[in-house]
Amino acid sequence: MKIKLTILSAFLLSVSGLQAQTDNGVMRLEEFAYPVKRNNLNIPNVNGFQVLKCDFHMHTVFTDGHVWPNVRVQEAWREGLDAISFTEHMEYNPHKDDVKVDHNRSHDLAVNLAKENNIVLVKGTEVTRQTPPGHFNALFIEDANTLVSDNDPKMDQEAIDRVYQQKAFIFWNHPGWQVNKIPGSYEWIDFVEKQYKDKKLHGIEVVNGLGFHKKALDWALDRNLTIIGNTDIHNLIANSYDIEREGVHRTMTLVMAKDRSAAGIREALDVGRTVAWSSNYLFGKEENVRDLMNACVSVSPAYFEKTNAKTKEVTKYYEVKNNSDLYFELELKTGKGTKKLVLYPESTQILTADAGQSVLSYDVVSTYIRSDKHLTFDINLK
Ligand SMILES: [Zn+2]
Ligand SMILES: [Zn+2]
Image (cartoon, rainbow, N blue to C red; front, side):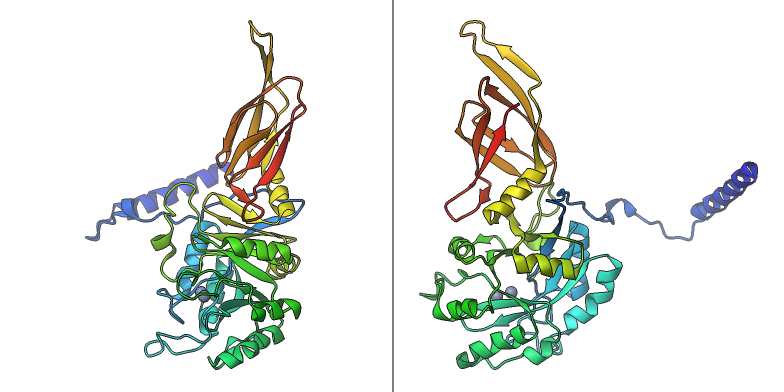
């Protein structure tokens, strides 16, 4: 049997070899082709939850974006994302003379490709009102075409009510985007307060593209709203993010979900189990950022100690390992040890500490648990 298989494979090899040698007058030059591969974004499970990489805010040609919907799926696949949502403007259609207005169309056109590529496609839309009150994204909607509302400012409430009636998850987008143009727009205004009180506001986009909206983080934390980070991408991702560079990723929301599904994402968004990730920074509720960091970072027992010949002081050596693609930058707050630790993605650093201490306390300056506060991370020494 083994001999037969060997003969067969030798025969097949010779046939395919023959085909490769046949010159049909076209020589393929594949060397510069983009390699077809999906990037693995590695973040370990957090307390049993999968950490899903999600971008819940993007546009296509079906509103003011510049790409066809399937391109968004291909980009997400390459970058290792788990879930995306097309959030086309409901009340803004600058391409309407060239592209037929249908607010469901971008989702419908990409739904099969998303399934084939194992990307969760969440149906969404952007409720685009004047600023203030601004723009709101609605995820998990049923039908975007029934949501279109008059852009009469008096209809602001009706626009929100329509997505609310579809049981959407609603978040306030980019609260500070017009801060230099429209006085009073970057404030917790009465309209937003009313949505919050009526439970029609569930989260805030504290990072939009490359912008961290600092006041928005504190508003969300003070009201227990879900922390969101998205690209709001209109052009190709590669036009805004240097994604070919090692370690570069788009702005996204890390969703700690029970499973990798739309329902799993919804449950996690509803209870606020998210951290926004943009550039080298993490933004979120203290417990979420801490749990995420604890899942990624481990410290070894002391593996070496050295005695200073003059002072007789003993220094202990430890390894601090970052088992993730996240970046952590730590500055010593209390204790005697390494002053600054940079935990690059998937790497290990050496930490030294004076013997006789049980803990070193660090500020993780690459995290924000308020606009003016970093996570405090204690390293227990053994
Ligand atoms: Zn917007
Ligand atoms: Zn947008």
